Structures are given as structure tokens and as C-alpha cells.
Image 1: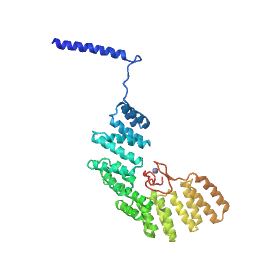
Image 2: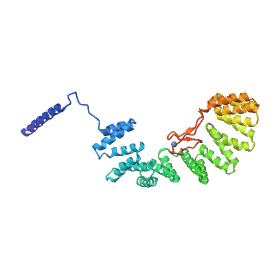
Image 3: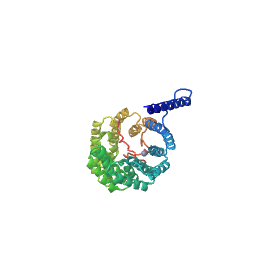
Image 4: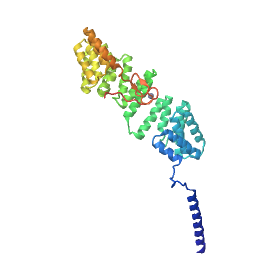
Length: 382
Ligand SMILES: [Zn+2]
């Protein structure tokens, strides 16, 4: 086999030359460490949560290889999340124009595009793109979260609800609690826009899914109360307080207004005692009880109740101010002034509900932030 030997010999020579060339080209400072490609660096940065580094590295990756579609998709999404939605949109739109994407890449590009359009405030176009996406993915059931965002941004709440229900079916089983929450939040939006009948329908729908849903009980109660059906309102509010003692404070003022108006002080007292039985450390119930005692001129009872509220919540400005009231009603002005002083010290520490995402402060509780639609947990007593 002389030919084979010759080939091997030539290969050996070439190999030796190659080896020598490699040795000579080597950095003299030591053995060369293999480096990551920009794309690998980008993925590692993304996994580590370092978005700025990921943006840099993905940008490097597409400069090296403009066919790296995944890098482009990521780059667009990261730019949007950083607030550069217009740039993100340009990248995703350019990718859309290219042909020959695999189905999952095509989907990722479309999803990015919908989110870019939402972020740039082009809601009608977002909705159109989402509808196309829905059409393309109806069989697969993918992309529902993105489609949901488009309907939410457009205020198409019935469509949004359908999609949310589909999502729940996919991931959460029957999930009537989740859907009740979603339905109730739609009611809140209607209520804020003054569409009371729509709101009422939504809250009733939520109660059909979960008959103790706190937001629905609260707001349907409000609607009944303002339309002159105080008895029904009281029933719903009490239902909330009993089913969710940790959230009873949401209805205390409402119950108070409704029952005081009717002069039903002893019923109120009984309600408060019941609530304290469920949750004895709820300072707000103590305060409500104290207000009731004040109203009935039971000054000693009022003071005792306020002292227990202060034991639970020493910084409570409301308890201090009610103590001022007690002293004043007793005619003890210097005692009243002392209480004013401690009340002022406590005022700084008053708490508000703030949105965890955009920081918007809420004067009253809404289950979704009116500014950014982030979900806000029901404020409860620790
Ligand atoms: Zn917000």
C-alpha cells in the first residue's frame, strides 16, 4: 500500500507544519485560554440578571453575525425592557421582514413586536398584531400572555377575560379563584370610569366564581349603598369582614357610616366584638370600637379601647387623635394637648398603599394599579 503510506506521510508533514505554525503563533505569555463568543457571554449575563452586559454582548453578537436571529430577538426585548421600545420595535420589525424563520422563532418575533407596540403606545397596531398572533397560535395555545397584555392595554376587558380563562385552563386547572379576582378587577375599572351597571355585572360575575371574593363584596356593597340599598350593602360588607377578618378594616368605615346613620349602635358593637374574636390584634377594629364608644359618650370604654389599640400599634396617630377627643369630651384640656403632641410624633409613620412596580400611591385600595395594572395584594393586618 505505497499510496496510503505516501498520503499518511504527507498528512504527517502537513500536520507538523500546522503544529509548528500554531506553536509560533501562540501568545508567548502562556497557554491560550478559550474565550466565550459574544452570544455565549450574552446568555450568561442574561441568566445572571445583568441586563446591561447582556445588551452589549448581544449587540456584539449581531455585529459578528447578522444571521443570529436569536441574538436580535433578545436584544430587542432587552432594549424594550430598558425603555427603548422604539429601537426594539425597529429590530423586531426588521426580523419580521426576513423569511424562513422556524415556527418558534417566528412566534418570538411576533410576541416581541406586540410588546414593543404596547410599550410605544401604538395600541391599535398592538391589538392588530396580537390578533394575528392569536390566529397563528390558536391551535398551539401559545402566546396567550402576550395577547392578554394587548387586550388589557386596549381596555378590551371581555376579550382579556376570555384569554385569561384560557390561560387558567392551561396552567391552573379550574382556577375559579383566579378568575374571580380577574373579573372583580374588571369591575373596578368600570367603577372608576363611572360605568356602574357594567361594574355591578362584573362583581356579580366574580361572586358567582367565588362567593366570598373580598373585592367583589366590597365594591358591590359600595354600589348598593350609593344606590340607596344600605341593607344589602351592609350584608355584603359584613360578609367580607367575616370571611376575611384580616381585611375587615376595609369595611369598618363603611359599616360605621351605614349603621350609625340608622342609629344601630349595639349591632355595631356586636359586629366589632365578633371581628375582634377573629382577629384580636387588629388595631383598626379597636379604633372603630373606640369611635363607637365616643359616639355613645362611653368615655372610659373609649379610652380603654384606644389604649389597647396603642399597645398593638404604638405609632397609631389615629388612636392618639381619638384620645385627644376623649380628653376634650371630658373637659380635660391639658390632657388633650398632651395627646396632640404624641399624635404629631406618630403622624410621620402613617402608611399608604403603594404600587410595587411603578410606585404610585393609592389613597384607597384597588386590586390592580390604576397606572400600570400591576397586581396589588389586599392590605392585611400582620
Ligand atoms: Zn403601578
